[in-house]
Length: 330
Image 1: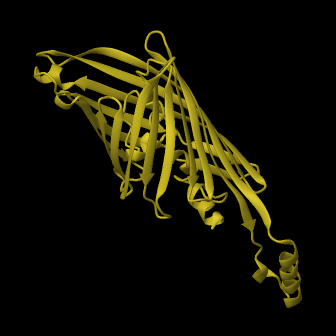
Image 2: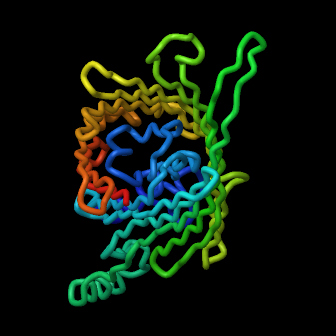
Image 3: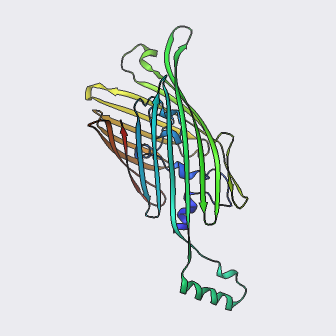
């Protein structure tokens, strides 16, 4: 069973294509997973870098987050990072993410042995000594830089203020499968264009509309294996929008998210988040036809500006998965 999980979550040594960075698509926070990971236009999201590097913009306090997942009792996934704000609306993030599938049994093909005696001897050896085990280990170290550009949109008859975060990722990917290792470096570029609708329609409290676009694995990401095989992770074009609206009457906010990925055109992603008095978060989402969801709770502690605990669940072909993560702003 672990071998099946390894094939699903990772790229095989002898296969190239869009699944080469599949472990990075698991998600970097319980919040993101609960929202179907439809976060390409979700500004001020510390863990959104894997979808778009522009999402870390407008995080004006130092932020640390951590996600630990046991996937179906067979794989361990982790993602942890820190975001640092600087002057002139510039932001830097460092993240490490990885997946470990251990004790995968290496099963020899007895049927390929030429004689019955050889098959018998191998079977006896396996019965006496057991199978050889190996691990599948993948991790990525990602550095993200983002900067916010502000200006006014000239429509001829009026001027509309906007903000446009732009960001870039540089990620180093390493993999180890049995006796082979791989290494590669990838580049992602992303941007978000956000405008307040009250400025456009001259009416109060219409919310903010944002459009996001990210080009991930720019010019393809190449993974070079120690056995001279090369994997190619193709360029992804991720696009979407978000709409944030304040519900002042009930001291709440609501956020709608939609996202598309050119490599997975049938996997349109959706997310909705309701924030109640800035302390309780209710989330639902959809990804690849599976329902996602979750909730969060935040509070303040001494010398800590905000700490938030998140829970999410999500469907999958292999069964439902539950995740817990937290975020600290200090």
